[in-house]
Length: 505
Ligand SMILES: [Ca+2]
Ligand SMILES: [Ca+2]
Ligand SMILES: [Ca+2]
Image (cartoon, rainbow, N blue to C red; front, side):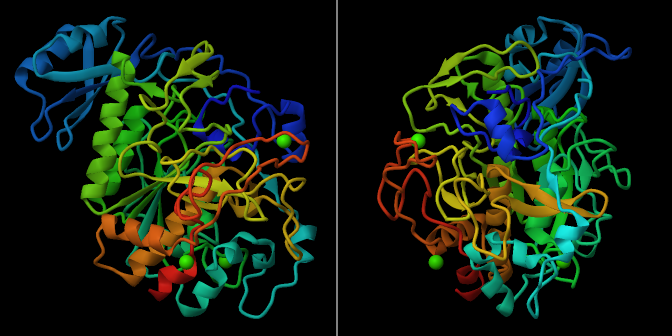
């Protein structure tokens, strides 16, 4: 197994126990990423970033501000609504010192590598659709040209839903990710610039276009955006909700790290810009699981919990990827080999009831597992009874789950920067299907609260019984155990997302 360094690696479909070389063979063009060898930049050398959590509703008190300054901290910004202060400091004892200050509820480093982490390039390369392959596709009447390749649309009845409605342009889904290339011709018609921003530094950068991925940066966010809302415009592909708006909130740095301060900024921005659904296909770096008995990690959980709850309070349904490591998130213990992914990771045995993959395991967040072209849990998808809320197509190795013709790939088609289309797989790709269905529900019920949208999402999902035994590679050995009933279980939660019910009920 490789050591993923960001949840954008949720695009990588690597079944547990599978040798990396084998895994890479079924996802063409995927290259292994070495643990980043970060070098501090000349400026801000040695500085780390911190979150300091105080009582919400007020700014930091004079007392707390003074303590931050005395401990060698510089305030980057303060989210007074939720009581989260973002600070830079080169003092190794900064968090420890702040935790002793009256009025500080928790404080912790958001990273282990000095600011800013240097770009390490590749984070899961998509399989770009070639011109020849695209030209060979025969679209039916009413289909966009590449739609016959999108087996994932009929898998959730989105094709039938589109005969009734494409969704409302009053609904916006924000993609918290590696950036969205809104100049793509399949995204431009539906892009919501006012709700888009760059949050990488932990505070909003509203420069025009700052939400886009930079040259050589990951296409992940652009792929996700197309899955949700690629326009039905006679060109390229069609999204799950091609009539809604999509926004880009860039929360991953050029190296692909989704740090806490950026994620907090993203949720707060979404909350205050009328976003109806947030799509979160990542985990917050550098810890795959944040253990609340660790004072630093506890502060990160606290900050992201406050931010995601704030977004929900302001009307957003938060949807997040369950992860690609074939973990049973309801197990008594999990061995996590990849954390922290910005320093030297070691095998950590954690209790998933006390250590959380955030934001996906936070209260209120919709947790999404992935299915392949046969509708069965993807070989790589995390699972767990009481953790998984809903399932949707995220793709799988074509060797395990092959789509019916005319589709040719078991992976998921999406938009790529530079006006391209291509395939990726992962719970990262399942999540936007659920975000799209939530957007259709919100289109049908414009006044529905996030709680009601979620209730409808789960009630309308098609109950999917456990796959038992689950031996996806057919080697005679069970690869994962599904617990629960047909109506709610550890593989598919309440069931498989249903876009047709979303526009009918
Ligand atoms: Ca299109
Ligand atoms: Ca249904
Ligand atoms: Ca097996």
